[in-house]
Length: 86
Length: 221
Figure 1: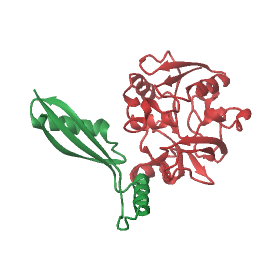
Figure 2: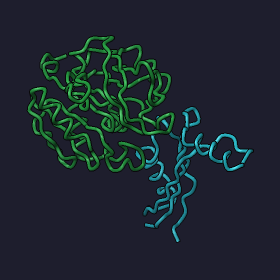
Figure 3: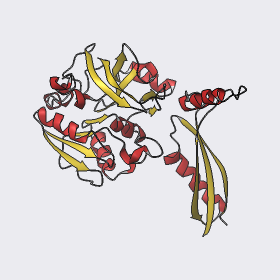
C-alpha cells in the first residue's frame, strides 16, 4: 500500500445560479477591481488515502466524489491530481 | 399512531416537532441518529436544524447516519416520512426525494412567515388540507432554493408531486416556486417551511397542525 494525496475541486454547475459568486464579484467591484466579471465559488478537498496503486487511488477518489464530495444535482467535480504523498 | 422524531447532532426543531406530533394526539418519541431501531413507529419525522453543522452541504453527512438505513427501508415500504427544512435537505441528499436545496438566491438567511399553496392533498401529510388552500407558516433557512434538472421538474409537475408552492413572494429563488415535494409513492414529503412552528394559534398560525394529524395517515392515503 502506498499513501497518496488526492486533490478534488468541486464547483457549482454553470447552469445553477451561484449567489456566493455574485456577491464576491460585487465586492471585488466595490474594491475597485473594475474588470471582474463572473465569479463562481466552489470548494477544494485534499485528502490522503492508502491504495495499491495510483490508479486504484484515483478510482477510490472518483467514488468519493460521486458518493459524497459533490452533489450530483448542483455541482461538478474535477479530480485534479493523485500523487504519492511525501 | 406512533411518530418517531429523529435527532441528529445539530437538530434544533426536534422538540417542537415532538410537541406538534403529541398535540395531534399521536404517541411520539425521539430516536437518536445512531439508532437503527425506529421503535415501531408508523411515521418518521426528520426535523429542522443544522445536522453536523451543515458541513460539506446541508444534509450531506446526516444521510450516512445509521438511522437513515431504517428511514430508507420505512420509505421503501411505502410508509410515511416527513422531512422539514434540514430534514428535507437530508431526504434529498439521501436521494429519497429528487433534486437539491441550494444556497438561497439572495444569499441571506430568511426567517419570516410565508404563504404556501397546497398543491397536492394526495400525501399522508396533506390529506387534511384541500388543494388550493393557502397556509401561513414560517421559513428559517439559508439553503432552501429548490433546484432540479428540467426533466425532474417536468416529472414532478406532471405527476402532481409538487406539494407546496410559495405564493405572494418566493423567499429563496426556488425553481417553480417549489416549497415542498413528494416522492413517486407519495409517502415521503419534504418541505422547507416549518409546520411545527405554526402548530397552534398562539404561535401566530395553527395552519401546520394538520400535517401532524394522524387521522390522515390512518385513513391510508
